[in-house]
Image (cartoon, rainbow, N blue to C red; front, side, top):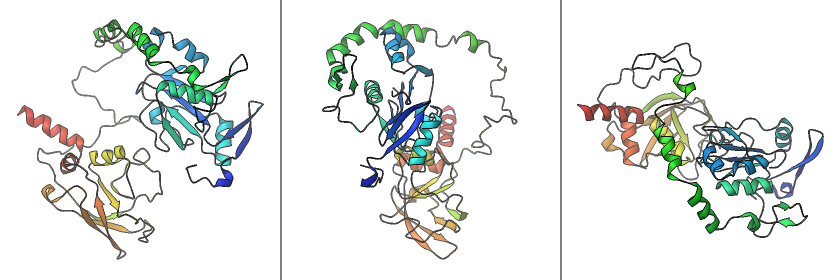
Length: 359
């Protein structure tokens, strides 16, 4: 089993009370199950359906999903960005106090640790029907080929093969329910808005009226004093280490200025480069500990002054004010990422190109 769970602890059972009813929690139990349109069952597992309600009603699925606990709970990004809400307090306590590795299953596009919920260390992407199947089973630690999902009203075991539709059944439903009129009606009215939207008070200015007192949205500083000429690459001199973290920290958790890591998840690497941040990787087998770095040092990163002198994956030198020095790999993996960095970020790159194309 993964997640570095000792063998003697892999079968651990956390017992707790769920609203007066005795309950048990095991490693791999599903506590969040979500169907999303990027595509919320156990009694204490959060189940949710996000968007696509029209299509679900068209094929008469929503009433059955409701019966399973998969109600429509929101329109927009929810489970994928950690907005599913809190897990029931008694379940959350059982997870934390017993160090349980519990799971989230969703039909979205993000499944790294901490993204869906801080307490779900195991997160898996699945098709909507699979999400339902895992929610019914209540665990991801199951072999659908040989183990039953549950017990039917007649007392017989129900297996995955008993509920999974055939390709022909799916094709028939799509052909009869996914009709051109659904899309035509939606897109014909898409620019007309709806009464709530149309009744909003909107300033007449063509530019957004930034409110400096807002606690939600502020004018971004990325374009202030921006010139048409890209600033070009820049090294780092005597920079402080703002944060010194262990594993499983992503750009969802921090908004950094200079990053040195053992590895990067692909989308987070792109996020860093897109914001004009230098992503560096320690050499294989090296990390902050092997170099004796504490985070109290000041760092200087030596980069060429011209983008033409930087190549994806090249080595750069990093020195500290404590006298330590080491070599890192620059993780500009493509020429496009290097172009973003040369412009100071993807936003500046796009703006300069848009203005340039109209001149």
